[in-house]
Length: 309
Image (cartoon, rainbow, N blue to C red; front, top):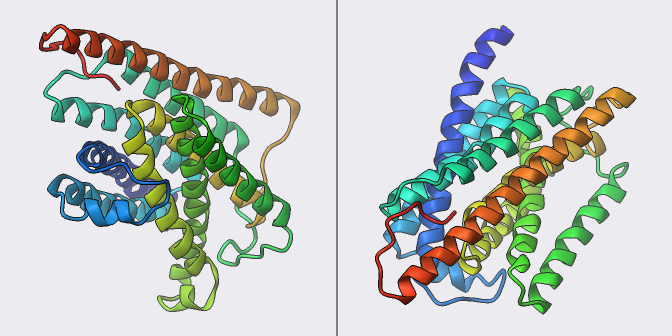
């Protein structure tokens, strides 16, 4: 297929997918506040949420967004698709404000755009080049990466379990982003297999790994939304970590190559700083708005300003 035709399909699919993820995030975060807090990764949370209309709306939006992400990844390069998906942070903030009947906060939206811009620059500078056969998955050469990612997830879960500081929610978001990134990287493999034949994915392990890692990441995201007071910082972490891990999966497991010249590495570092700055901006602004909201509620005033992120 001509590359321009592929982009004509991939870009709208990625933007609509980002909107779907944003709607799902806002709806699910709102629903998780309506049920009892459960231990991390406890399936009981999903059982209690299943009858909530708002959560079911989020579930449908998630499924639609995942399908759109698959379409986007099938027709467009990850360097274009993933940055567009990061705009889901802005969509989530917008939908969350709409549900709370408040206007979105401009500073939080600016932070979301910083994350998207920084990630776009990072991926465009890295320029991942597909491997010879990205429909095949061989973990033997990428075992160190797998161990490192598993250790990071476990470390985040342990940290969240033993501390009470608000940063524990960001640790849960980081672990969620890693699981989502692994899922996204393997979904690229599955889409490649589907182009060979509809039954091809069932003869390879990538699909089965996705069926385990994907639901775990989804459950952990619900824990993150429930245990955090702010939606935007957690979403920013998840959506920023997700594509970076997906790129690492491409390099470590799928034989993709990155441009590692000194100039590109310097640019990638600057882009990473921009992403981190966006997350810090979102977190600081969201915390400020939350404190202001709590102060107004303490004196019985109805807040009329922008919704906390």
